[in-house]
Length: 74
Image (cartoon, rainbow, N blue to C red; front, side, top):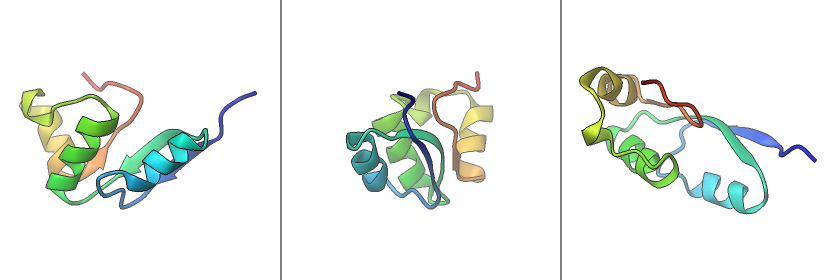
């Protein structure tokens, strides 16, 4: 059976995603406008440390506030 997917708008640090993953959902897309929350979300759910990514990617994540999930941009 295919997993249900969800998007998370204004994701914060990812509390809702954590619950939905526990219920069997798969995250398709999430966004957050707070740089600090975006960094925490990326670290917790994408295994990414935004301080180690290239400057272009950091601008994408922090300046625009988007977190792209399940796919690497690099």
